[in-house]
Amino acid sequence: MTLPKPAPSPAAPIVRAFSSTAPQSATLNQVLRGCRKPQRARHAVSPALSAIKSPALKGVCIKVGITKPKKPNSGERKTARVRLSTGKVITAYIPGEGHNIQQHSVVLVRGGRSQDCPGVRYHLVRGALDLGGVASRMSSRSKYGTKKPKKASVG
Image 1 (tube, one colour):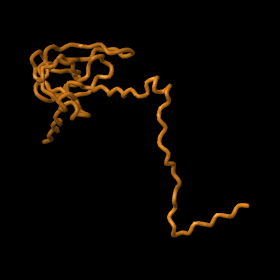
Image 2 (cartoon, helix red, strand yellow):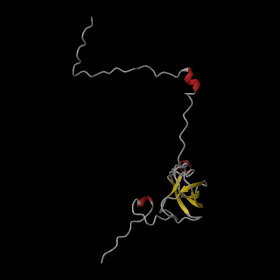
Image 3 (tube, rainbow, N blue to C red):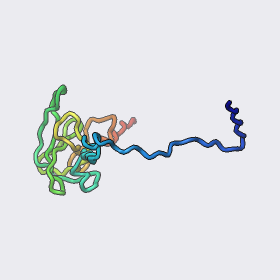
Image 4 (cartoon, one colour):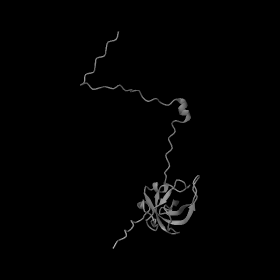
């Protein structure tokens, strides 16, 4: 015969049951399969910048060219081969329509890959150093280094 449990008084704190058993260790088969190998570290998206922990670096343009995007995209993506101030040579994407980059132009390089161009892990900053802003840009001007257009004065 079981006795009914007394109702908890409203003043008494509610004590919750919890499991205090230790977490189970790996079985022999799990260990043999390699569960104790350390996880591989994630690789950096822009390794030349993350190695010295800087958001952007100055570089000199070695060569300007075009890259074909991966499938299923098509077109010509403008890219530049840049020698950074650290001495590393990287390939960077030139955003926006048209550009004024030539060989020996000094440019500012930021991280961020071009999703459909293989091997392109950096972007050039428009409107900084020798790379001018996009001329006919009206929206998202700050991303493309374009000044605010002057209003036409009436009168």
